[in-house]
Image 1 (cartoon, rainbow, N blue to C red):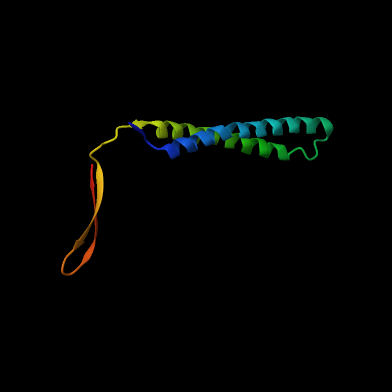
Image 2: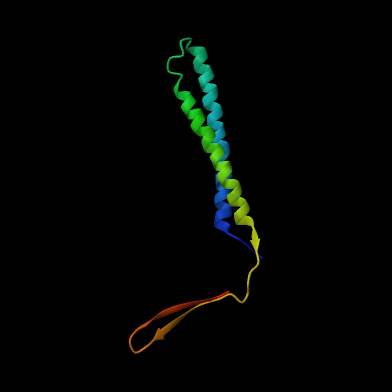
Length: 105
């Protein structure tokens, strides 16, 4: 048995591990907006935090939504067929020549 794709599994692990960064940025942005509201009673300049919070939350959720299926699909075990082969063979005729690829599964 072998894994379906190590690269897919590693990519999923990286994405899932980056999700907490997005959530931390969203949390800090939300807290900063709250502090900005306290410091500025007229709330001047406190509108930019909403965009950062939204983008960070969507990014974190996107990383989780893409990373988990990548881990599951990449980690799936598949049987190894010992008789499966791929051979490259040259061929030539009086009019043409080339290479042929034969795959036996």
